[in-house]
Image (tube, rainbow, N blue to C red):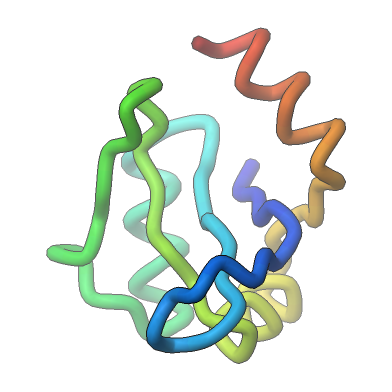
Length: 83
């Protein structure tokens, strides 16, 4: 499964952003390419979460392509269970 967390306004130069992540790196990269992301943009957070940063427009594209939207609470649960 592929997920997106809520958009946040944090002063990023491209505007509000969020994260695209998945249950496996292979699934994440495949999905990212499908929505037009370059695989070299993949990142790893301090917690170890493999992800892509998304702008609001890319988030909309990800949701349209089937990414599951998580609330901030669901995101926290995901991180607790997986990291």
